[in-house]
Amino acid sequence: MTSFIIKAHSDRKVPSPWKEDAECPFCRIINSDLPSTRVYENDHVIAILDILPLRPGHTLVIPKAHYSRLSELPAEFAAAIGEAVTKVAHALTQALGNTALNVVCNQEYAQAVPHVHYHIIPAPSFNSPARKSTVDSRTPLTRREMHQREFESRDELDDEEGQELAKKIRAKL
Image (cartoon, rainbow, N blue to C red; front, side, top):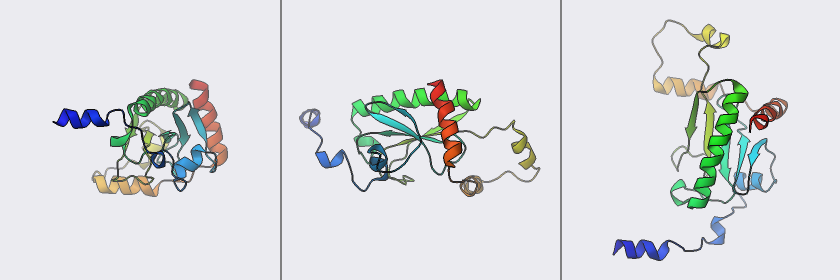
């Protein structure tokens, strides 16, 4: 019985309102109604620098069709996102000289924009002089303290810095 129900929906057409949302900031970026710093684009996805990055290079990979939930994303877009995440992550690690990354996709919980998107976030570099100067011998931070400090340390993306970083990433694609 279950396979019959699933089969009945396997080739169904997606209603057009699911494909674009005029109020969605990512749909507006895709349509060039809002500015962004694009680092990658193909027929199915775009990759842009986050305007409020956790760390320099924080990039978002976004399908060009509006789907709020990853669990509803058609396979065609999921495959395109997977390919783009790999390409952009590789270019980003080369551009920054840091191979450590976090790749995150939220669904509803902690999803600030209700449009599927993946975050590619360079990990902090523990070997940098700036990092060494902030390390002390006090008790390690709790997860909550660590997340709070991460949030408080975020700065809005500077357009000029974003363009320069995007140029470096594109050169590695």
